[in-house]
Length: 386
Image 1 (cartoon, helix red, strand yellow):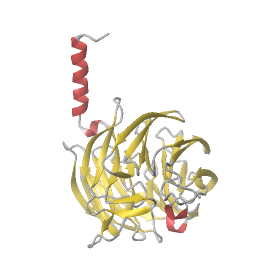
Image 2 (cartoon, rainbow, N blue to C red):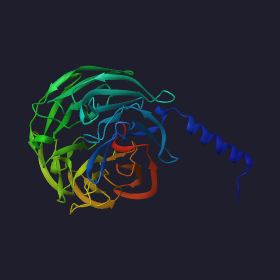
Image 3 (tube, rainbow, N blue to C red):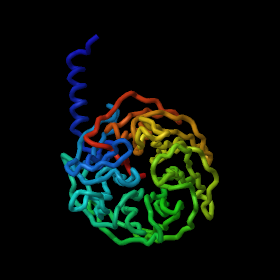
Image 4 (tube, rainbow, N blue to C red):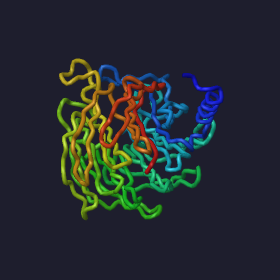
């Protein structure tokens, strides 16, 4: 039965209001899209004319959808954590890891961090800040006042402040070895750094804007490329991608670190599948998910080649991690993110230029069947800092 004209008018007005609402009033997830670099049959291909952008995906009661796409330089190189939204949803920070050299023959390290104003209509880049060489995995503090950026082209982490919509470089912390990613603890007083080239993780101490390298160094699995901290600050989960960041047909792992202990220590190692590049923990603290390459980053001649990658889910109970589900998704699903309320999981399929949408209920995922088309290959995805 059709609703009466008043109800139809009311529903139309509500839909219009939702579509016109400012981004800061909505939950958003960012997708970094790159058409300049792409994988074809396992090989890197360069298109100097390819566009790079960041899509802003609105997560609301109407379902996830792209609300805007902003032209901004970014890259599929590096862990899929090189962008993030501030806790107040007003700014997005995007690291520009690499750029093409003068003759467009290869990529070389950049040193730029771009600032997007999400409150602008439409959203736009309002500043670019110089940081360290090849800025990669980054993290915004839970209070939204500090930013840490891993500089893979150096042995350092850049420290920046946020004051309103002004982002300023404060200095660098010497990390002694190359760092791929850095992630704040929920209390904002510590951060974990992933040293992919030396198979270690370590720790930074944060006191206001004073950031120091404290250690200890902990040897984890092969090529720790990404990590996340549980909302209660008791566990760190480190995704050991293996094979220098590529799939190789062998099982890889998650290192479970008790960061409540003094000193922090590995208390478990859980099988994660082939090449878990992305990892994200739900805001509820009940669920962790890895994005596994599973051979989809290789050419058809590789014995471990698969056209599609997968995600693997893990239940979290106290300090125990239990493997639950393996779900096939699209090609090279290295980037993934939970919505801030934990109701949705988005998985970016790099080769397919789209996003798979999952509903989350406790520790269970159910695929909606929806695919969000993107204007490029999504090499990174992130939501709000917490």
